[in-house]
Image (cartoon, rainbow, N blue to C red; front, top):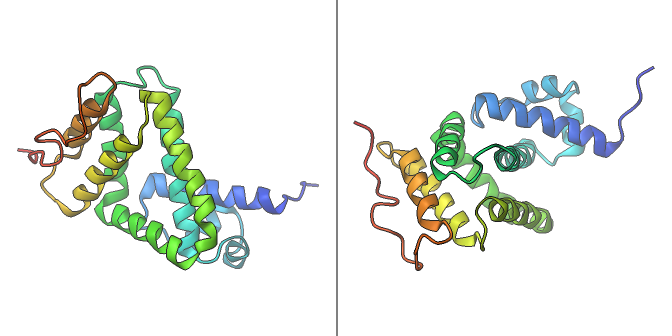
Length: 194
């Protein structure tokens, strides 16, 4: 007979399944029934572990982003800005502009709708910071803000070359790059393809 999962084990199972769907299909195209089916649970059980679909999607998206940086940190050439920029651009494009806009909306809505989750959200931000510190050294707050800025601008700019913008951000924020706090010219206003 199969062993019953604990509440935390079931929640973890749901988050893993949801993150897998988000990684392969993006945030916009996932329905609640698909999330439940992928996790092997009923839709009702989803909502015993998460407040609503947005809560589940937000937490799964956070998991997906952290997993991306964890995998990146253990790969050969982990601190190569060009390779990281390309991988992050592919990841973002898979999510789509609308999917990333929705993730940003979910992030800020979760802080307003569920203020009790602020501590959990800050743990995720701190983990992201720790992973970037491990990849690039120094204090990565500026790097995080610049990367988030590039991603957010990309969601609104159809002609922007995201990989180029991210590569410029990563190179500019690299220890020893001589960057003194001003955004280097051409970092965010990168030309589009073609």
